[in-house]
Image (cartoon, rainbow, N blue to C red; front, side, top):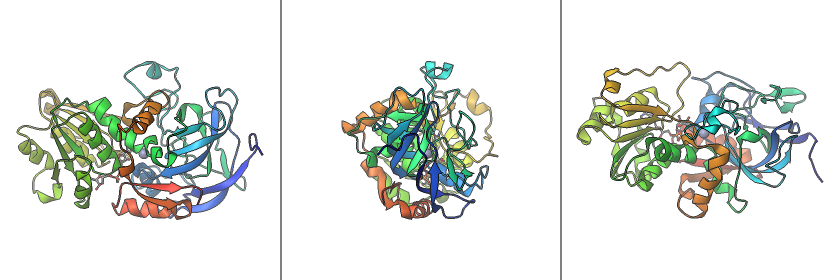
Length: 379
Ligand code: NAD
Ligand code: ZN
């Protein structure tokens, strides 16, 4: 029996207030409106960005909210005007969109769509500003336009990548944020040349995906930087060749890296969210040609401080959302890379839990254990 056009009642994990365990509730999910798609989420995984907006220590507290943005699912129904997706399509919802019409979408250099670029404070749909989720008539906020911690969610069509229906959604769901972001930050933005050295700050899933990008680019040295020594053993499997723990030194880690490399690394990619690591990642690159790329999501009041002479000395500072990939145009091909075994994803998935135990995924991330924890929505 078709559910198109009807309100769907299903389970969602609701964050009622900052830092409190999510609670699984029955929610009502309204049908998709113009340019919207309703998706049955099958697998979702936890990214550190969800945790920042859940604990809301450095971000605006917006509750009650359905978090989640890294996921895979199947289109249940589409709203008016949606022509390139139909029920049954396999899709990845993406936290930043592509309208395909604005100057950014027309540019080869940008994925910062005017209409659908990441907006962490938006709590409703673009059409009418309203939420499609409710409990007893009371609206529950959206998160990043994706809210994947729900059995069904409504997403703008511009934030949906249609992928190969043979791709295993329990694996490729991690391409919906973390793995594409880290990999793209290296191959699309830092662009190391063969034989160059690359420093990766933060050896969580995003950082190790950035290391994977360095490895496939033919980097000679991949220097991993993390405060958590238990990350180092795992990182070896991802091609990281050397390790630096800033806690082991009584001088700034950028100085350690400059000494190790005789002047600085050729490229660095920051995947921590720590403002201190962002500054170190910039200051450790070689003058004349070094490029640093920031990926970590900062606290809302952070400010980046460095001496301008670092820039005059011809070091380049960049940043990226989603590894500069355009979600609809580029992600289907990244999924194909996994299907052709050019890109490994399975090793990033260190845990899986049933939806009823979603809070375990938060506990693992807070403890710095494992990389990605995939949440199975059907259990
Ligand atoms: P994670 O928690 O799994 O990994 C972060 C790692 O950084 C941890 O191992 C932690 O020990 C390490 N770390 C923290 N502070 C550090 C410091 N000062 N120096 C060195 N290492 C430090 O997180 P993740 O899911 O891999 O995400 C990494 C970052 O990327 C987060 O900030 C997340 O919000 C951000 N992110 C950004 C985008 C984007 O599009 N720009 C997309 C996804 C995630
Ligand atoms: Zn993410």
